Amino acid sequence: MGHWSASRSLAQQIVEAYPGARVHIEDLMDYAMPELSDAVYKGYNLLVTCGPALFNAYYKLKENAPAHLHFAGHFVEKLTGLLEAERPDVVIATHPFCAQVVSRYKKVTGKKLPLITCVTDISAHSEWICQGTDCYLVGSLQVRDKLVDKGVDRDRICVTGIPVRAEFLSARPRSQQTRGKDAPRQLLIMGGGLGLMPRKDSFYEALNAMPGVHTTIITGRNQKLFERLSGKYENIEVVGFTDRVYEYMSRSHLLLTKPGGITTFEALFSQLPILAWEPFLEQERKNARFLVDQGIGRVAQKESSRCLQAIRALIYDDQALDQMTANMGRLKEMLCQERMCDIVATAARMSEVCA
Image (cartoon, rainbow, N blue to C red; front, top):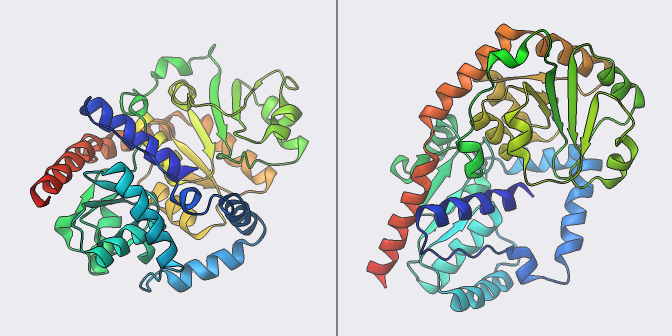
């Protein structure tokens, strides 16, 4: 879901910058294997929720190893049909698998089709690196430096941040006046697209009883959790899947969430301090370290009582919240989301020259 969200955000920004542009978004797995893609995604979700230790072991094993593309022939064949139908000037991959397939296509056919790889994690796993990539869009200076250490040409890497919707880019930090004595502090909780949240009723009862705090919970596609919590607590608003997350971030003082790459940068551009649930997937552990190292967030233990303790310690601490907001502002100034559209346009012009 995060990779798809990044694609949509890029498409929105490109069309707004270049109104005549035509942007087509495709799920390559679904396009190449429509009968099996649903089972593949369900299997992946089962792996990361029930077998994180196995996932992390594989992630670490391959972290510094050259990527090896399985079933390359089938996917290259399907990709060839897609590219012949769409005739793009440039391809942007927001998933490492897609970048590898396009890179293999370029090698097999000798085509000069520009490939931009958008890294949607705040880490430099080797699966993102492929010879056919002409430009990498990365989330931080640290990711750029790690890619360089792995042999990627520094001039081919642009530090843009991870793509977010334009509504997040125009966000402004909340006024300190909204933390007055009479106005409740606004806590936003997000569990990602799958709505992964604490299960115990005692957690939500304690949130509801927190003095001077109003909580909004976005349950994503977790319909059971939405039905379980909706209307049950006086000080808790429950929202299902929504494409207006930017509105909820704009009126919040603290975000409690899993530290996915997309959510992290949505909060960063909204200048909304982050309290991240202690992650169990390796790439999210790296994202969480980024939050702490940059002074824009903290990590809360997953156990309910410890998590509540971390919420109380931060949401009433105006000095800490203001410092995190200021740190996010400085990071925003370093990142150039607008450059992404210029990079795409430049790559498209390169394609015309090579044609």
